[in-house]
Length: 225
Ligand code: MG
Image (cartoon, rainbow, N blue to C red; front, side):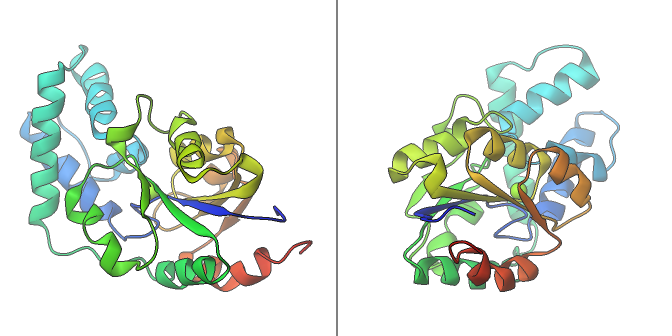
């Protein structure tokens, strides 16, 4: 574990918010609305990618062609509308405790998300006071997760090195992005994705739930532990 952790770079969907099932349902509704057969579960594997990248991949795989920028924009807006129409998303159990522990140690909490979903981004100050004044969202990167760019950008904005950073993410593509950035990478299982997939993606350590990570964090942040 890093001795002098200055920043925690934290994913949003499936990490801070229990939002992945709702995202999967919104994607499913949008994609099947185009006449493309799909199951809800398959949308978990896109987790971490930006909306535009997800749409481009679905078009290539299912329609055998690239999506135009206009299609990406229009279909992402539709998916975002379907997401926002669903009932409120809950804060992930353990997430507030985790953030409070980090802030109490003087560790800056930085958001690193592939999302551009305002319905969640706008809730952050109320749900996590004192955290996430620095944010890297889908709008801020040219190459999203699994590329390391989002996590590297977060370090740059926070003025920290990889050795001074920990990253916390629940998805294989997010963990891959974090591990490639050089941050100490903590994977958290919060949905149907098994821990083996997070280890394979490069996580330094994996916790089986956010409450388990939150409980272990004080010990984890103690030097030489
Ligand atoms: Mg996530």
